Length: 338
Ligand SMILES: [Zn+2]
Image (cartoon, rainbow, N blue to C red; front, side, top):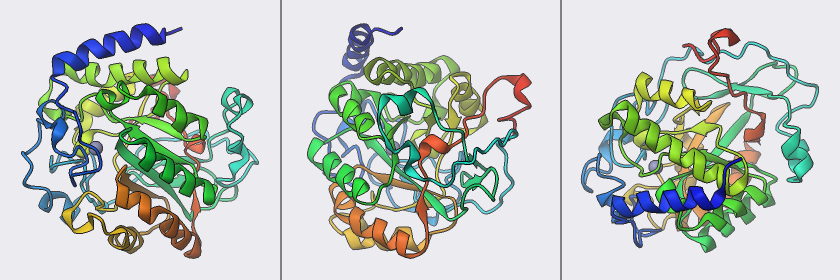
């Protein structure tokens, strides 16, 4: 029911008022936003300096209020504790198994009949089988933030993913997507999921409720109007959100997530060094890993080899379409409660 044209027009207006600082950006900087978009996008965070620290140590990037560091970048390692919050009660795991690309067909048929969820996210943003007998625990979720930026880089990533029959989540920013909506369509056509990463890549903790709704809602509209389906997953920039932002995201029917394995591909130490990206991810590999990467040239360079090594360790790739999205409905059994 949404009208693409309208959504885009509205988005454009906003973008303009936001300053469109996002000019070039792209791959350049470590800061995924290349520093460019800063004016409007990054502003909440620290200037450009502080890239490392914070996240690095990797405290739970978790919603962890914690470090609102530069990019969500956080490298986070995971948080320690566990406990699975998100309730996934009805584990009606269908017979279908594993991240099998059953849904593989990016056909419309697949779109219309979403597969039964086989995994749910736990309290530390890892993914676990709803029914261990129906799906393997050794899987990882691949995610790429801060796009869409550059078609060439994106296509290389998509090709690498295809080479391993892997499906990923691309967490996009509205201010970027509105400039290249065709890249949203490309991501979708290639069978991947589009996640919401806020309009401006801003620290949402600095905003009041209405502004947070605006940051999230406009991306829902833009993506929905462009590819016909609104995002189901939300990742706050810098992993900064906390319960308040989480609840607002849930108002939109979104599953709020951060990550459990930070590739640190945004860090200066990884720039132009695919090997570093690969090592960082492998060092933190664990069942159900929620791997944070970015749409960066060196990450694209690393991808094929990285995926091969992850497979060599016995892991499969979790098709995001198989993730359970708890309903925000309070009667649904306190699904997202925790
Ligand atoms: Zn980001």
